[in-house]
Image (cartoon, rainbow, N blue to C red; front, side, top):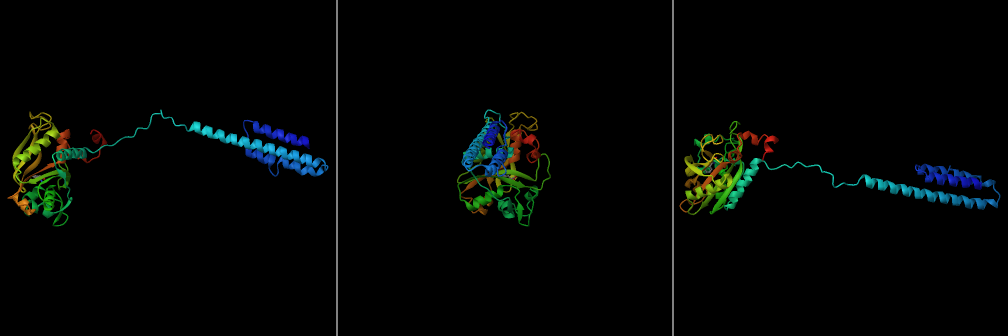
Length: 337
Ligand code: PHE
């Protein structure tokens, strides 16, 4: 019996030293209820009373030794698995990363921000107004009564009889003057809507930036100086501006303003269509009726206003020849800015 125990011990320990070893199966096979060691203990009834405690003690020692070796082997395997995992999952910081493709601002947003910066630098503040507007602000307060032909030139999307999608940013002028007393110096960029068919130069939705200055003693030369400063900053130091007489119901006198072509400098080229000049905005001195409509005394105060198309300025600035490119979200176009 002692030899049997000795055999079991040696067999178990040698299996535990082997490279491959299923520790759980080994525990069951040697130490489990139906295991080899238990089988030996069951046979102890056949021993003499003197032998019994000796064999019993030996059996306990064998069990203890196998258990200790088993525990050590399990711990060793755990540690090896952990080490393997650490090696496997090591982070190599020298590996090239996956490049993330960065987006950027839309060219219109960029141009708008640039224009805002220029006017903010001249002391203007930004004012915003609603895109769904009352007829009163879009037309009437701006000295454009019903049946006035100017309403036809701005084909308007009406929502009800007196609510519409604003056809210009000029209604913001009125909203600002109603709330604020002079001195006033604001620009208001935003979306405007006209029921135009979409083509290379027209879109039913586009953007304008309005400007308004009201104070004592404001003259046409303030308007000229302001627009010239803007044009030089936006299109380059050599840029010149030109005023052409025009009519707007809400300004008097009124003008259309051109900038010298930034490509040919005024000689005439493809971009300016041989003109040497590019029209970018409408402007004028705020009509006394408009000041009055807003509760500002035209005997005391005067002002100027201008409004320009953001798309037009951006197209001029970057040499873009089709307004539809702004709205199509074609990356081949957008990527270039
Ligand atoms: N609102 C005018 C337009 O849309 C532009 C403008 C603004 C003209 C302010 C004069 C003064 O055509």
